[in-house]
Length: 261
Image 1: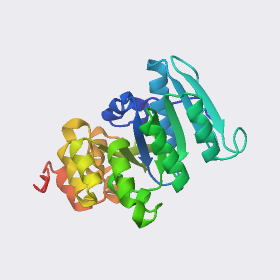
Image 2 (image 1 turned 120 degrees about the horizontal axis):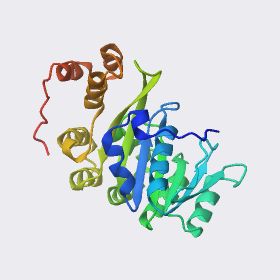
Image 3 (image 1 turned 90 degrees about the horizontal axis):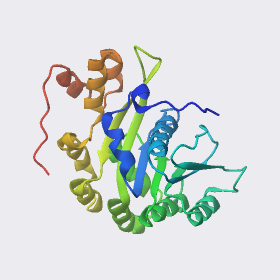
Image 4 (image 1 turned 90 degrees about the vertical axis):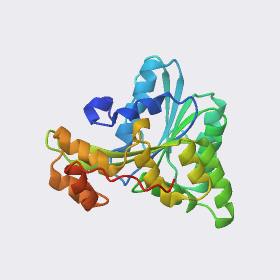
């Protein structure tokens, strides 16, 4: 278990990660495969919140990876199997303890997701993780947990309660062994509408459109990491969703967003 929690700057996360820590409620989802550093980035966010606000922060983990130090906020960490039998019991009990921020770990089944969204609806800021490769594809991963008949209701719940999805991959770094690359989708009115109406294919274009609101796609973030000297071009192209687009970005050609929105 780690007691040292790195800052956003040390991790090299995009600047807009900071603004996502100020939501009073709703749900923030971290997407990525196992070993993509999701837990570390979430720990950095919780620590940042803990330094600034006198809140009650509750984590439900399997297993506990970081131990937090109480600063302005006080932390309550529960480990599945040690402190609580399972996620569902832990989440049910959690809401009774009146936390302001809850980390639910992995959104692995219907019950956990429903409990998490319910907590978000009732005024808590909820952090969860999911196995998905991009921010837009996370919506489908969540829907996959549910029977088709429920998809509309789930979309509505997401449109109303989701605040942001942060997708993350870990790459080989130049200055340090591992560097995260991120895609950040913040749920503004346009994204909310697209999620509610099932227009997931347009989400990626929307992320590019709202760059000035702190959103970023993998292509742009990879370009920034190369420009900063954090990773080399070869690594960036290897991990790029569309290497051709990244090559154009390196040349300074911005691929303008199609006017579909």
